Length: 611
Image 1: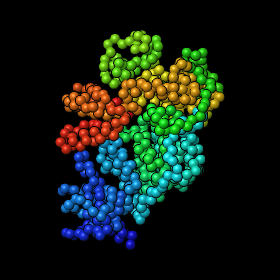
Image 2 (image 1 turned 135 degrees about the horizontal axis):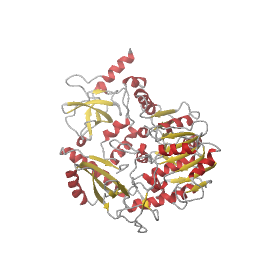
Image 3 (image 1 turned 180 degrees about the vertical axis):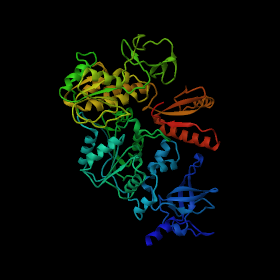
Image 4 (image 1 turned 180 degrees about the horizontal axis):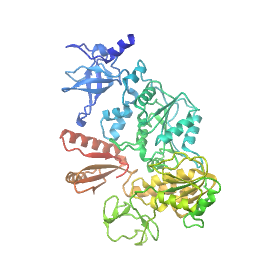
């Protein structure tokens, strides 16, 4: 019965015409969920004496706001305030603190980076609540503590061939001598499962899984466990990037450039950028076969230390060599299973030069593609090219290569009768290679995990001449991952000439010949990681007016307009990363002014994954 009384006390409203304020720290600083951007600020409230114990920092409360009662989170308790005519808290609505005060600087850094209100970040941190689950943790409070035992570590670990990501991370975690927490972020549920299985024997009791696919109560229970008991290891997908961790913890991110690690919903943040913001309070480790350009730039600056093994890949054949990919498949099937990767259907039809095979570029630096109705166009400035010729050699002939995965599987089935042919696509994905001997045809990024006697990488020119901001990264990452599953004495086929930078990268198991080329290209075209980009979508007339205004601002190095249809357009603006804070602050103020003036809502995305 005593426990029930306690619940009622904590959830009780402040009653009476003139409640008395708490004698100790009577002021609560509250982040209120107003739903109005220009009202994004903290507000002071009086804490009634009967709610003093319940109104802890981090607890959820109900407060009067104008004529409404709105929810909020207590960010601080103070003795004094400069605000007059304060109102009282109405109710404490959580049975324990839901955020840790130690995490507030991180939340504020996230809000600043993405030009959003602090309350937007806090709402993203706390999973959907369950009072029943909170009762299980009643009386327990955030215990996040810790400190750095030594200098902070920031490292990029390039995974060697014949080693899986979950194997590499398990080896790293099990070899760590420190006693701090470990937060592991991976691209998808398959990776969570594999890493959990790899670590379960190492630390069966101290592992918590945080993913958006968990049932509501389980996800909330796991979140509260990370907040109150400081588990040894936390494994999760993108949403777990905001999980509470102790000072001096180890943060691990695998596959930092994966699109699944970049939110497709407001405020469109990426797991990599959030972890970089946490680097002041934690040790940071990236694991990858082929890192993003953003990480490559941090290595270039000396901010990240690279750890890799020098390896030469044997048994590789290349386009225009003596062995065809059919020959490689035939030889490899005698020993075991074979993996054949092909491009995902539906990509923009980019192209290269038939003579020199350099990618087709616009004068602005953007990549060209062929629109069936409009002809050759630029993916960045939308300029139409009436009479295309190669910027490198002057050749006018276009070279494009592509074949759908299902068609390829059918053809290979006829060529190798009696062999089990398996297809793995995003619609019908196979996570692990079944037992037995199989010929696996997989679209890039959907390769079943396993050991293969042969790995065939098709559609090279097509993959490395697409127009997306991250197309080359995605293709390179998929190829390194696929080739990592080739047995040491197995065979491989690369559908690019041996002189191509990607071929050289694969053969030496070193991404930098290719990444160096891309970094120079992105710098010249004013693209990430050297520039921050904002994309603004809205009605064509308003976007055109904004283009005129933004073009006059010294903050933006380039302003371009893309027509979406007859009624809407998109504005693309770019700013050097050295002015990142100014860039974010500008768009925070821009959103605030539009909210104050009740202007028509625009869709604003900072650092979009694709344009």
